Structures are given as C-alpha cells and as structure tokens.
Image (tube, rainbow, N blue to C red; front, side):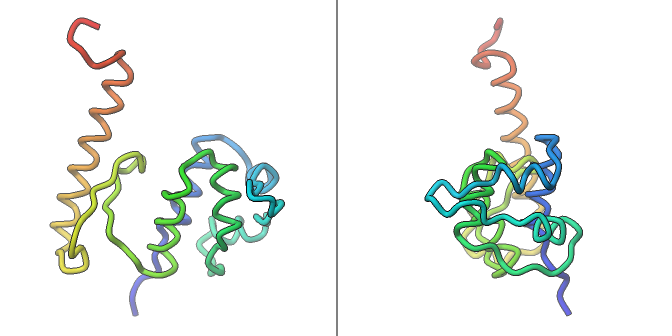
Length: 140
C-alpha cells in the first residue's frame, strides 16, 4: 500500500499559517471569483488539514482558495493534482515559490528528486535575498 500524498493539504496548511488566519476565517474569505459564491466549507478544510480523507477539490473550490490564500491558482491546481491524482511533473522549493519542471520524473530515484528539490530551494533563497536587498546589486 502506498503512502497517501499530502501535497495539497500541506500547501493549504502552510499558507494558512503564514497568513495567520483560522480555518473558519479562511472558509469565509475564500470566494469563487467566477461567481460561484463560497464553495469552501469549514468542515472540509478541517478534515483536509487533519489528514482525513476528503474529496478532491472542485475547480470552484480551487478558485476560491486562490482568493482566500492569496496564491496563484496554478500552484493550487498542481498540488491538488499531485495529491488526488498522483500527477507530478514539478519539484517545488519548500516555500513553493520556485519549481523545477522535470521530464520523466516518474523514472527518477528519490535521490534525484531530492537533488532537484535542493536546486529549487537554492534558487528560492537567492531570489528572496535579492528582493530583500533591493535589486540584488552589490552595494545596495
């Protein structure tokens, strides 16, 4: 039996913690910008974060979480595809700001995947350092 993936749940939990909002507040502020109302339910979010089985999020839920979590829709879609459909073609940095596209990722060993993750993490750290010091030019 394979271990259950938690890509999407981890992403939601991590981002919610960064924003310092409660599950209830996240559910309230997650509104589908395409006019679908508030499809994100507190109970579903709670189960997701506790690691309990949940149904895959609908496109409306993903759009609403895009608003509620203030993060790119594509990041949420890819994390959901990885967790619920076992689709994977990207390796992400820990903060999910940088990704490496990898052809034939399913053929890579865990060590090779970790090497790509390390590369993504290095780029993310360098980007954060540059943005924290102006333009990243010497003397700034």
